[in-house]
Every structure is written in structure tokens, then in C-alpha cells.
Image (tube, rainbow, N blue to C red; front, top):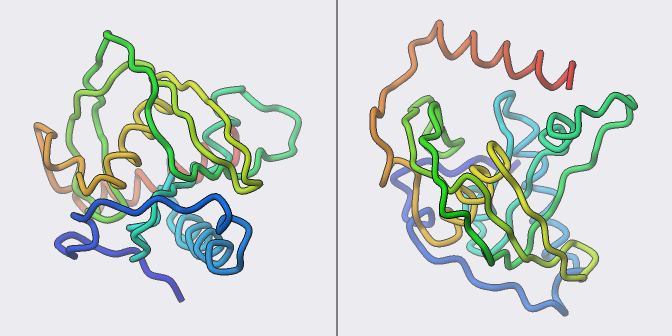
Length: 186
């Protein structure tokens, strides 16, 4: 069973190692991907997860498929699969920034804050098929890309957030309910 590592575990503070492209299709990396998906989907409020969050110090993160469905307003009923980003790097950042309210982390549970993020970013990564791809994101997706790549560099959102606070039990329940409804309604 893979558990999500919590702050102050030192693995969250290290710089993750690149994955050699030849290793991507091998069983060890396939297992890490499977464990990351399991951990992510166990959390009702999870939108993405980085490998260090399950104690694997490699440069990889996953974005939950429903995030892309929200962006596309997917009404086909066929959910978009989770997207794997291996050895990701931000290749372009907008000069325009925004204050992302309510940013949280599966490794810093139920603590939220406001972070300054670029409004849009472009990421180049390798997919689980071993092929390089580029993807741009704005708003929530841009925020996710920046948050997850920070994880790969040993940075947590609380390192640069303002207005940090703990959610009450009631707020946690309301948030989890809202996320479940969002996932169902896309």
C-alpha cells in the first residue's frame, strides 16, 4: 500500500532524479506510476501528485484526467485518462501572474494558502510511451504544473504562500463534497 508522504519528511525537500528514457517502460517505473495513481485516486480532493509524495525521488508527476475534462467541458461521458509527465520542465512562462487562492497539497494536509503563480506555462515532458510532448496550461492547469514541478525541486507551496491557514473539520468535509460533485459533473 502506498501512502502519501507528509511534511516534514525529508524526501519532500530533495531534488528528484531524472528518469532515463530507456527505463520508462520497465516494470520499476510502471510500478511507480501505478502507485501514484492509486494514491491520487484515494484522495477525494486530489488533482495531481508527484513521485516524491509517495517516497519515490524521481522526476515524474500525474494530473488526474478529470482536470482536463473540466477544462474541455467534456460531455462525452468517456473520462479523460490521467496524464503522466516524466522529466518535466517549464519551457515558457507568461509574464502575467495571479494569486491562486486556496492552494493546498496532499503532503501538507488541510493547510491552504494563496500562492503567486504564472497565469500560463508551457511544459515539455516525456509521456509513459517514451515520447516527448509539450502542453500549455492556464489557470488551474498552470497552477498544477508549477506546484508539481516545485515538488520535483524540493519546494512546497507553504514555502512561498501567504495567508496560510488550517481548514476546520466542517470546511474539509464541504471541500471533499464539492470535489466529488465536480468529478461527477465534469
